[in-house]
Length: 336
Image 1 (cartoon, rainbow, N blue to C red):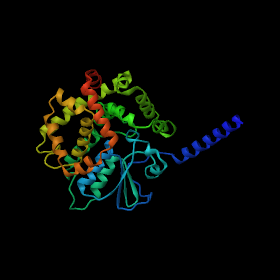
Image 2 (cartoon, helix red, strand yellow):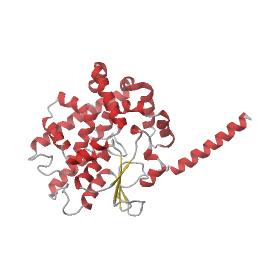
Image 3 (cartoon, rainbow, N blue to C red):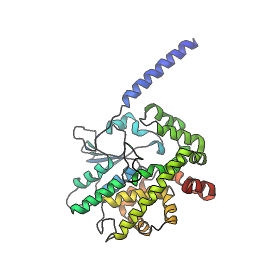
Image 4 (cartoon, one colour):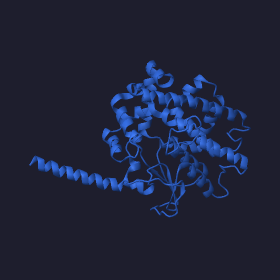
């Protein structure tokens, strides 16, 4: 009898997994708008975004700067609760399971930097101009976008050339302090359906080890150290560019997409404790002033301050408190 019940359970489990695997089928998508896809929608613009996602933040800031009204769909990543990006429902919106996705009149627009430029082009003549007409300045803006970008295919590739590639490694301590708030069963789903098995493996280990033991692991320390050292140089590059600018912003007096993407980079450094570390160890006075001006813009309040996630807010406090009371842990994370 027990053998029969076990066999039935195994068959049922196998069937469930097969069905779920089919429902969660994913594939890569090209950046830009796909007019061959028509998604259900209620508004002209609908944005699928995550409050903590670096790329999602850029798109929200751009939409709010442009004054574009949109319906907001909050989508969770595992670090904010569960793998909603690989749910059957979200994969219908973005088959790659990536964030953000902008839907315009039912047509999805994929990849954040494509979304930024698409949103600018979709606005009327009376909207703020976030991309310069001058070809030389436009090229410079695009270089900054690339400099701060995180590749969906290889997020930590090209750290020596791109500040964005350093972001995942520098976020590791915050990821680890967020994990206690996330049920283990939600993490384990990643082994079944997420294409990158390294992510659920890292989060499972973090769940078991905690921040100090996790950050003591040699591969983690090496990655964090490399990210730190490259980012230090990238911040100097930004600081020099701001010093040479003839205005408040990176391209001069005109606020642009470049300022938004640099600002999101600095935000991630601020919430992980790295910005405070870098400003203590080198002169980044122009970077600091730039960041404060950016945070004073109305779009920052609506796109960033009003879109915080409770798990990330708790993890930020936990990380700050742990590193302030434990000098060894502070050195391990930031100076080790």
